[in-house]
Amino acid sequence: MALMRISRVISSLIFLMLTACAFMQGTQVTLTPTQTPIPLPQGTPVPTRERELHPIQTPSQAAVEPTLDQPMSCTTENAPPTYTVRAELNYAKRALKVSQRIRYTNASEESLTSLVLSVKPNGQAGVFSLQSINIIVGESAQYTLAGQRMEVSLPEALEPDCSLEISLNFDLRLQAIDIGGARAYQGYLGYSDRQTNLGQWLPVVAIKQGDSWITHEEVSIGEQEILDVANWDIRLSITDAPNTLRVAAPGSVEKISDSEWHLTMLNARDYSLSIGENYRLNQAVTPDNVTVELYTFDDAIITSDTGSMDTAAYALNTALKSLSLYEAVFGDYPLDRLVMVEADFPDGMEFSGIVFVGGEYFRGLSGVESYLTLISVHEIAHQWWYSRVGNDQALHPWLDEALATYSEFIFIEKFYPTLTDWWWDFRVNRLLPQGFVDSTVYEFTSRRAYINAIYLRGVLMLHDLRQTLGDDVFFGWLNRYASTGSGRVMSPEDFWSLLTPEQLERTKPIRERYLQKPQIISLATPECTAATCTP
Image 1 (cartoon, rainbow, N blue to C red):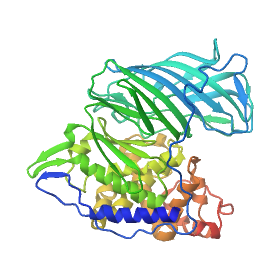
Image 2: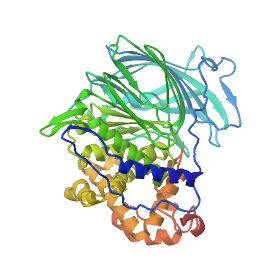
Image 3: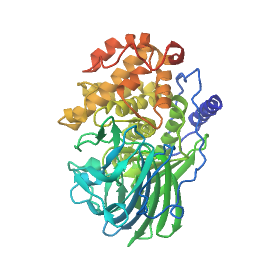
Image 4: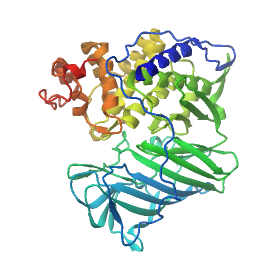
């Protein structure tokens, strides 16, 4: 089945390349892609995922609160965390009242006496205000909250394979996007005059590694999240709002009334969304039946001496092509929909099933050779290198950012091979990048130095690895990493262990050139053998 899907994707790519993108009015500009062969992984096909909607617990099926005499229950099922949320947004005040229930199963082999939550909104002063937290009905739980880390004491030990429910009530008072300021890049949780963004707005259970719960200090450089997959059930009501609002949200979206929405998604690392006034919706379906929805404003239609240009149509076409390409090379996109939003904050940002691309890139489009092309495909690539395969974004940021940036090159190489030299010069070489690829976000004093080391030196390393190992091995390796890491949090050791000892030995000079810790891998204990690692 997977090989048949790949065949369909290849056919769709040929169709997309032969279809002109009519995004110009006035003077017609034709951007005709030219196909360059990129080897697809061979050998054992990666199992496909069904795209049908799966039922999850609804409010009518779930207890509103855990009962007094049975706050915990035990089962042999190792279910992911489930977040059930009821939120009311006063749009005029940009203020939310949220009731959240968290159901968590102890998947470790040890009993737990506390549970740690990562509270992303508490990283911004004045945004998060906790009203109550309960494990047993009528009895407040004991907790500490420092920065984004909340540690909750449990009334009794949570044994392995046992579950509990925690209920929280809290308020969020969103801050205006700090355009031009130090926090502008965190505009995915904030608002402008026409847009309200709820990116990682909910407390989530932290990941436990060994004896430690992992949460990281927030800094303005990069991201610091390390997130497990979870199931999400959200009812959102919006009051005191204009009637031109549209909700751009991933997963399953049901509009219950003019002011209420029911949002659900399974096995996602976060649930983020955007609410905009007068959003223009452009949408299309890939040949593999993934719906791409693009939400933009009127300023996405720009004028020049040659006429008017609908940059949204161009971005939608780019999204369709990149999504189909990445499915063919990396493996299935596991959702029915991909949502893309013009952002009123700089650059771009990825979340599960939804990506933001800065509005300045729409307004500045002049053709393929633009940031609208590169940032769009970069953020879509994060649907594999973040959403499907997780990593510690604070300590190992290259595992998602270098791979997403190199995915830009794969896109250009596939559809616009005459522009590959432009990509290397524009994206990498002119900036003379320095630094170790395996640095943490805390080792940089500027965003530019961080990008140069993690993103740009990262793609140089990946390209050297590709040239050393050959295309078949290299692309098979990325496909295998996406499959092995699906739904997991992966480490650099996991990434390198998917090579054979011989292949790993061949990469030693490259690792020594780009990594400050090139010998972190044991050559004697790879996860695969020559038989399973060779495509």
